[in-house]
Image (cartoon, rainbow, N blue to C red; front, side, top):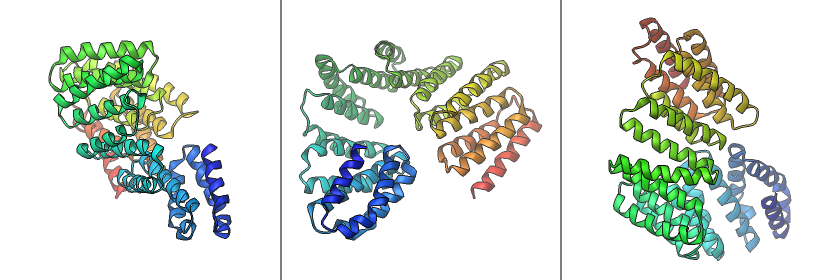
Length: 381
């Protein structure tokens, strides 16, 4: 609501009253969508507004409107998973913020650009933006501590473990001295992941256990999810499939609590790519996830609900209930296509493909799943 009011004040201050009046309804709807988290419908409206060149001519109020709409468009694009479009808009917002001398806005925009470049795998550029953001914040602040963490993660993801550990030390010093527990947990998790990357599994497990204790103490459910996921990766690398599956499912539970539309499908993709569990385990799991999916659908993200429904169908297949599994795979897939839910479309198709190599299925079952997969591929053409 505050963002909407701020935009409307700018419209009222804008010199071209006729243009402002004609677009006021579009602005109101776009901001309503944005503030309610409906980024899919908000984005085209912001793009429509940005294409209205007459809205931004002349005075400072018009330039500030362009800055706000450009930033909101970038945020929406990022939430929709269109990183290239997000980079275009956020870079535009950064340029406008500089020209408007919005110095207080620069560190968060630099940070946003850093996050986008990390997603694109451009780690050098990401670190450059994070350092630009650091220049604009107090070196003892929470913002500085979290930026050190982002830089460390960029080095880790790029395989530069030496620099990652060095930056982790700086982040730990600031977070411990000033009581930034959230950053301390995140940095410990990064150190554990670095140790795992260096094949120091025992050290990694000890470090991650320390991080988990702090996360549980602080009831940081998203951190708990990330740490459990790291445990899953380590145990899977060690060939301890039951332990890996246990931690994948624990991670999934906490990501669902956070309605994480990126990590929930990702964890399910990893879980269903593993060698299948026993039929007894699958029978139990399908009932658990059927209940979870039903409860979650009432109040949560459609993407997450759809992913949980797919997981039910997957466990139905592993449990040997092929008729029900095929029916539910088709239902969830049709729902995903209707919603343009690319994440779930991808994991459902990949999961079915993995089933074709599952030796626990009979030849007839594999043939039936192959037919379903062929139908899905035709629908996607």
